[in-house]
Amino acid sequence: MSSHRKAAIAGSLLTASFTSVMILGFTASAEDEGGLSNHGGKAVDAAPVDVKLSTLLSKEIKVDNKSGETDITGVVKNEGGKASGEIRMLVVGFDGLTVKNVKGCSAIPEGDLPDGANSGFACAIDDLAAGKSKTYAIDATYDLGKQGKICLPVQNADGSKTYWQQGPVPFGTTNQAPNEPATPLLLGTDNSPVTPGGDDGDGDSGGSGGGGGGKDGKDGKPGELPQTGPADRVLPLGMAGAALISAGAAGLWWNQRRARQES
Image (tube, rainbow, N blue to C red):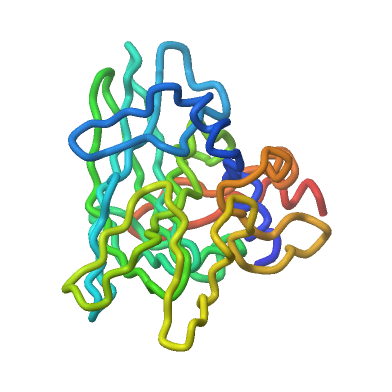
């Protein structure tokens, strides 16, 4: 059962795997709103008529060199002329970036995370009015000895459609500052880990084709969400089906409709 749930979210979260040139093609003028950017994001499934959903992330974060703690801002927007209806945004961390808390959101159980992810939260939104946005404070830690990525998909209520997905997009730097109080990391930059023995840590060697960690899923389905890379590494949505349903006070439950159909 657990493998079906993992496969479901792995299939639902489109791995936006493009070269930097292709990303610029989808976001010809990446938005810059008060230090926020939609870099690495693209529309996936068609949203309801006159509903236009997207997300923004901090362009720069600062990681405390002692505690590893950092703060990230995530925004979901509706730039259409009609209210969105019930939707949700997921916040998922990979590799060196671990999401510790997202205010007002529900933690995704560890056993239900996609392979390659180490943490995640689901943020249910009853309705996002036309021209409005909702901002989330994301508390995270970053292991500077690794690469780290974050992913913000925006889905419908039952998770059967992903209207928009930003990432998995990396935060990183090629010039760490271990003697400073904090190290600044930039969105869209692969981290180049530096450790006292010259070890590059667990991250891959920069570049854009590496995976996000984790092993292949069972039943022959992809079990990991690779970082931004070549276009031929896109994970098809239809292979695994829908993922989450709405998060409530009782907890987070997964949509297993497609899994039951497969069995």
